Amino acid sequence: MSAHLINRATILGTGLIGGSFALALRKYTTDLHIGGWDRPDIVREAHARGALHECFSGVLAPALTRADLIFIALPIGVTIDLLPEIARLAPAHALVTDACSTKLRITQSAAEHFTASTALFLGGHPMAGREFGGIAHADADLFRNAPYALIGEKARGDSSQGEREQVQADRDPRVAAFLKLLEKIGARPLWLGAQQHDYAVGLASHLPQLAAVALGSFLYDHLDENGLPITVAGPGLRDSLRLAGSPYSMWRDIVLTNREALSAALDLFARRLDDLRERLNSRELEMDFDSANELYKLLRTL
Image (cartoon, rainbow, N blue to C red; front, top):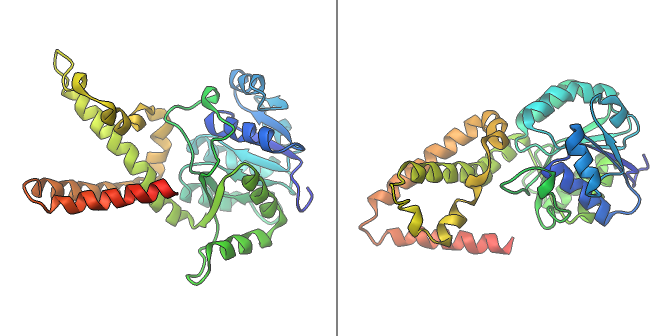
């Protein structure tokens, strides 16, 4: 692989994230050969959508043999199971990166199997997705303007974000080449430690998912024979419950591999709900609305 160019990419898992990454590469790069590995029906659909030049199923070796970039977009448990085989089969010049939603277990496993004589492993997590998975929902622009977490050593407090990215990229030309691809597809890379990442996404992504599930299951349990209270619901409830449309199969491994951060986040959130209940008859509740309004405004600027 050239120091500045990835010529062949193989995507392991061509569902929502892997399929979207393939479509993004097809749309925003012109000189990449893209292969995909998945179950036969899924990889065929990805090929039919124009995401792939080449399809692989079954035995993993043929999909990895000539790859410069190996992008793992599989469930966390499957990724952990496959990392030893990927480390053994991937060309030594290749960059291997994943898109899993938790990072500590992934990076710990990768550290056991990737060495100086194997391909280089770089943990990653595109902060983009939808409540429904699968190649049918894949989108070439899914990553545009979305944060893309990359897992590296913790930077010193006096380093700027740009300086941290430059330090990481300078360590290996394969990382620099991958950063250029992320730039082309419109993602916004940021460097985090694995524990730092899992804590942050536990609060910003996983907690909202569980909160939506809790609200949805609570309301479902309180439906009466006339469909109340849902029959009087407006768009606000639909907006609040959008995440509740995600199936448990998409979240099982995330919950299992981020239990400590999620448990702490749920404890803190439960205390905040208790505080809100205590302030229902007080104008102090206005401060919570003000804080929430400010956060909402901030999110709209990102």
